[in-house]
Image 1 (cartoon, one colour):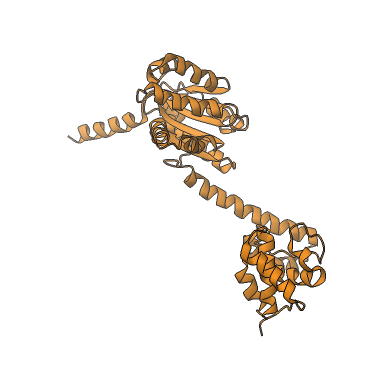
Image 2 (spheres, helix red, strand yellow; image 1 turned 60 degrees about the vertical axis):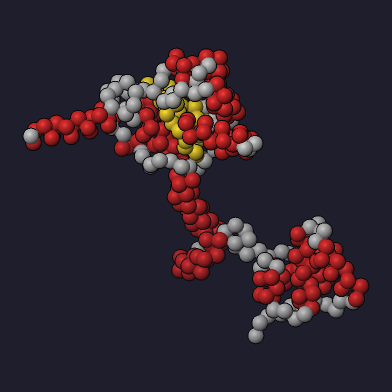
Length: 333
């Protein structure tokens, strides 16, 4: 038989007061939900049904009815501190995984004859591992990274002029923690984007929020938002992440208005979040790339104040693979 918790007898005046709270909805959501539980209980509805209708737990329904029976309407308001101690379900505490696995943890604790603190350490450690795993899986997907390269996959031997210690220093993410920047410069095909993505993947795994974009895509999206009167909202896309990766800076010449949009992103992120950028242009060429020497100088001033710069001036990986294929075809011929 379904469990029922009966509320005390309610007179007409109290019934009218409950109906006013429920119908008007002018009170807080907490009061509104608690008020709904009282007449449902008076109608003899099962606890589980009341919990379903009011989007809460059966334990919470029992608490509300118990407290109303003891202290009346005072107990319906958020500031109410009386009644028996509140009870909470694991999902309500933000621990949904434990709700699914608690029986297994209890069995393991019984077999190992764990003490209370050891058991608590077990279940919280398990929940933390689940959260970390979820973040590792979701982080790269939400960051819009084009691929998931790692630094272990980068062939530094093909770039003898690149000091691998500089890359390893960046991989510690100390610059991210300091809200500083990293700039990777060099001609096409030398692995700038590979390193930038690898650093972004490492940041995701360390718990930082990451967003990847090419400079052209960012400018195009900001221009469209500005035309639609939603620039402030769209800027948030590039300001919120802990790490913003901006790829291919300088591949297209920008107009002054477009360069100003880039300046807004750089200046508003200054000392508030990290930027990892790649560019095929030296900094002395940015004035031409941004169509305005003054704006380019202002952007560089904020970008380079706290910035690690790595220049890669070796051969192209893509050309290397293409040349090998051509050589194989020539040998066969």
